Image (cartoon, one colour):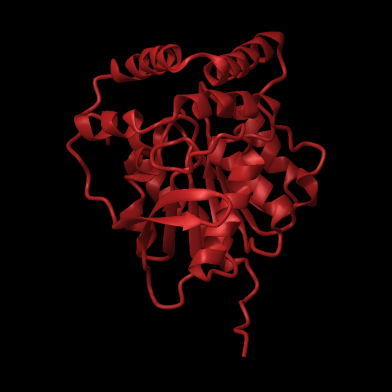
Length: 290
């Protein structure tokens, strides 16, 4: 079992690039084998790409070229004065692929990252060879209590935007301390300290508004869906509904909670690798341009 209070893991090289009109983004990269398919790892809400995928880098890098960016407001992701939107995150990924000269790739989305992956399929369908969705859903709100919870996040995001700097810092510190009490090692806690909590709050509100049910059936690229069957964050039945809505999908089941990617890494990581390989094998061969 791998835990977030373990010593600092070995992480792949990372760098920052500036995307014109968007901002500066940080990402890690593993080269993978020659001519390997490209994966974009898309992390969950309030995480960073390292916190979400540190257990996965090495094994995925044996088969794929891996691009692993921090999303807007998270870690060292893009900072913007504009309101957070999941669509902007999807567009950031397409812009990063342009910058790196990557024509097509496979988005691998975990939780919030799964919504970004779905939006990539909708907004940039020519770029997406296949998609891998993990512990995620096509919607996150259906009950009154859920609606109120996400509305509260949206309201806090608006408050953080309009209140003076000192008040915003108090909101940030309170949220950070709530996470810090989890007794993580310094490397993990330091990841959270890099967040822009205004954007994090707005991201929570955006998740509450996300709904792909009207269009997800039109996503016909090869898909792999990793379903966490004891998930207390994203209900398993919603994960299964997403799987059943995709016309070209295969399901992979992990008997774990929402944190299985690191809490049950010995089980989750091989399943994720299998899911990614399956998705890649079902894609059409890429024809090189003359």
